[in-house]
Amino acid sequence: MAKKTLEECPRETLANEVVIVRVDYNLPLDKHGEVVDDTRLVRTLPTIQYLVEAGAKAVLLSHLGRPGGRRDEKLSLRPVAQKLEEILGSPVRFCPATTGPVARKAVEEMEGGDVLLLENTRFSPQDADNDPEWAEEIRHGAKFFVNDAFGTAHRAHASTQGIADAVKASEGEAVAGFLLEQELRFLRDAMEDPERPFVAVIGGAKISSKIDVIEALLPVVDQLLIGGAMANTFFKARGWAVGDSLVEEDRIETARSLMDLAGDKLFLPVDVVTAPCIASDVATRVCAGDEVREGERIGDIGPRSVKLFADALGKARTVIWSGPMGVFELTPFQSGTFELARAAASTADGGATVIVGGGDSAAAAVAAGVVDRLTHVSTGGSASLELLSGGEMPAITALSDR
Image 1 (tube, rainbow, N blue to C red):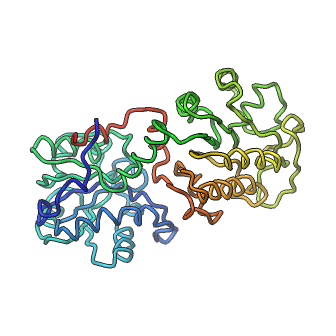
Image 2: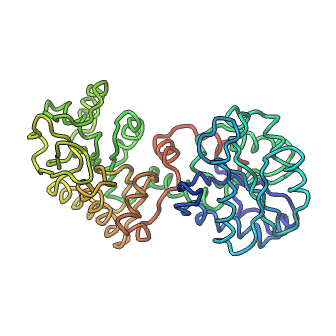
Image 3: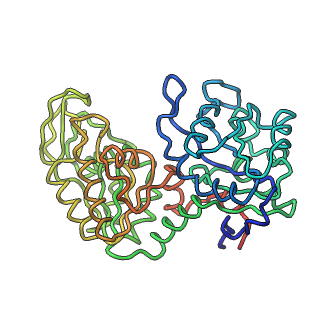
């Protein structure tokens, strides 16, 4: 069932109304508490600006880190509010509470066009517990709820699902913000009606976290390229020696089954970059995938693999990429991931749809200097995988039907 969106809420209906907006401002902070990466802030600006221009009272909810249901000043959203104010170019008020008299007073004092960020929702254990009474409290009487937090859409929390239910129970509207709508459109369109050839690139460390995605992609894609440390488990399933490389021993049979299921759709690296250890100043060796020596560790795909993968991307019209090809954070092992990112960007330059599934892949695209050339970079890591694998998205299901 299609869900209602913010665009379907006429501006005049929002004027002077309290609108609760769930955003995902789970941002990296440095040791001084300053925001390191403001990408997720920037991506919510269209939703916030729409509400401000409509004269709504925009009350923002977000979590930050994992405080475990307890107050932790190191995880306060105060610096996030300051950064948002800087980017938005207009005042953003901050309230050090989420519920209770202090929060209620802050909301009551708002005027049309104001923006208020409440404190970290996960300072309260009731959020993760999806407590319906607490969800009613964080509603603050609002009849409009906007979910623009795709990164948490797979969580059944009070600030994602519970508040949507509470707003609908009060005969209000729970709708998708512009960012959430964009995420759903790109990811669902890619899975349901992709332009072909459709190529998926799956990397990262573990098969276990991506089994469902691989199984969901196999019937849909024309080619599936596997890289990163998870390829080691496939190598082991082939009977190849991998030295001291990271392997999920309990997933070797799974890898073997996936290769049987995929047939000639699945491509593994043909060569790899190895070293005695994974470090920033280590000497490396390039060898064939089945020639890794005892005591070596695989840290990246090799140059022949890069060309093989880049050639596949160059012919694609739809690409989904989730997970790096190696330990790209370290110079000796970054070439495979960066070259893949550049190949993906060239494919997008040619008019293909190239979707990056957030997390490390997005960070790699930024580091490679190509992020602005890609069609869509998701703000949700686990949420992207959950959606691609056809998993349940309770925060989206809870929104008002169109």
